[in-house]
Image (cartoon, rainbow, N blue to C red; front, side, top):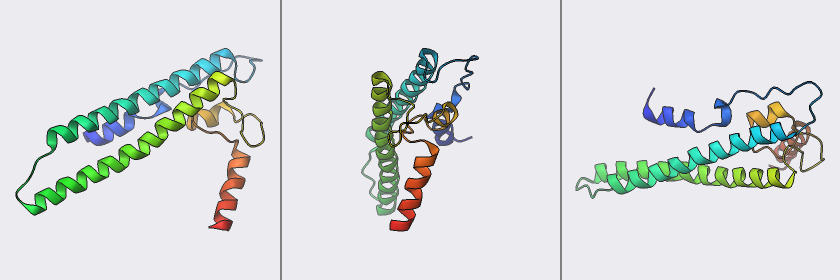
Length: 146
């Protein structure tokens, strides 16, 4: 596995074992909230480390190649890296919003209809803000408009 793929594999919330609710446990109990808090904070931390690595890599590797092809290759690589970091920056913002929702007591509930999003959906997508039904309706509307 290449280092890029290894790094990519590390930047996910999926390395945590699935939460096993106890019999009769309420949705978004303290244990569940702590489970998702750890997932979100760990994910954010890993993404922030990747941002730092990119900055250092670009500073260390920046060179003024006399050959235009070498220069173009480096600029292309840097551009791809910056686009990736920009996507990750947006993801970090979503993670921070999820952590704020968690602290307010809104985490795990659909922002559209208010129903429970579900533990397994949140484990698959910890930044989810809608239940599967509302998300599906949004996607159908998007297809009809676009």
